Every structure is written in C-alpha cells, then in structure tokens.
Image (cartoon, rainbow, N blue to C red; front, side):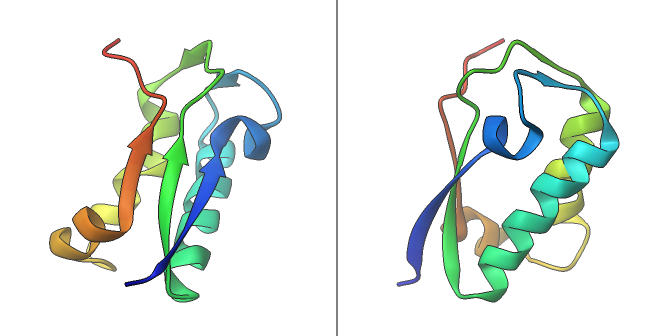
Length: 85
C-alpha cells in the first residue's frame, strides 16, 4: 500500500477563495507528483469559503482524463473536510 500524504488546498492556493484555473492546476500538479512518488493523497478542502467549477475541473477533473484510471483514483485519492454544499 502506498504511503498516504495530506494535501491541503488552502495551503497551495494561499487562502480560502478557490476560483482560478491556475490555482487548480497547482493542486493538480501536487496530486500527480504525489502519485508519481507512489503516495496516496488525502485531499483536504478545509477552510474553503468560495470555490467554482473551473477550479475543480483544473484541480480534480483532469485526473479523470486518462492519465490515471478510475480504480487507481478510488484507491489513491480521498477527499477530506468537504461539506455537502
């Protein structure tokens, strides 16, 4: 089993507003770097105030674009600190 690490979106973006695709790309890059280093990722959504779809598509949607299959992502990516809204 791969070692687990926690990636905090708040720390990568530098604040609670997550709206730019550039910031989403930074999150995506951190996740893929962890996967390539044989690490599983706990992705923390803590301290979020505002988030839009464009950010999520860049940060997470790209993961489902073929580089990683769904079974890999289910095993290696866990979302934490996320609310229903």
